[in-house]
Image (cartoon, rainbow, N blue to C red; front, side, top):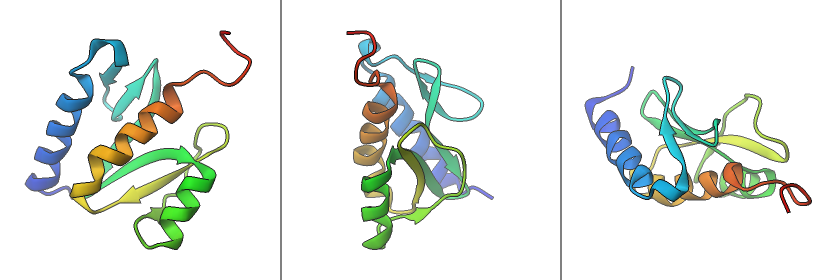
Length: 107
């Protein structure tokens, strides 16, 4: 069950990420999406984000995040972040990772 504090923090994060219309962030029933692809969502009191596999593994190794078993974008992994002070930074990284076109596409 998600706490009121986590819900409020996710709402603030959503507002922050949607502030720039050029970033194409939308709030869906599942979480935050960019160009139609999910990049972050709230699960219990944790923020779950899609990051490049190497970055996700590093965060898990340093006990900053825990792995979240689920299908992630190509070359990526989902991780759970419980530290609210890291949500903005890691959600922004996830937005960039999921929102950027793959190398060789749209170029």
